[in-house]
Image 1 (cartoon, rainbow, N blue to C red):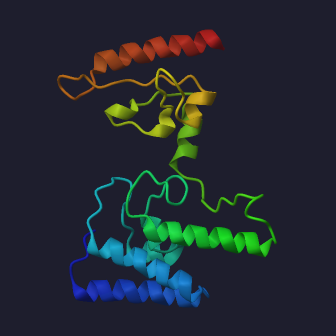
Image 2 (image 1 turned 135 degrees about the horizontal axis):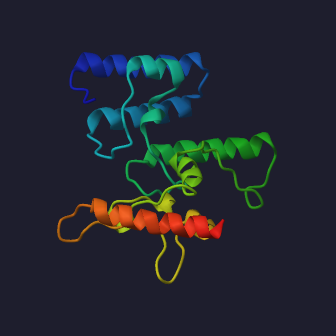
Length: 190
């Protein structure tokens, strides 16, 4: 959803600000949330899984952070536009350390919820995914000839399939053939 009117922008900013105030967010957290929202309003994001939710959904389940995909740890993300997300996550980590009187040199704090990789993890027993250079995702089990890059490729024998280099499409015949071969491997190993 592209927000192109001042009224719409103002109402969204007011909605988020009101939400933050009602939920007792600190000034720092409110400011960071507003910065994320401002970036979402003023830019066009072409990452498919960063869909913008409606006002009703925002009121029901969260904040503008719902619209942002922020994989990996702060300052080492795979996707751009995470400056304020990083600051907010670091703020949460520091507060968690302080709340439990923990030394940051001894403890690492992960404040991230579960995301797509966890869901993909379960499916690797049943399906194989598109190879990363051909449009797949790291959580589908990417590995190179010299090393296993993602956790899923360490724990599972993932079988990536590729697109036809000349057409840019996958061949249904090749895919079915490959799937049959993969199923035979899985069945034989059980």
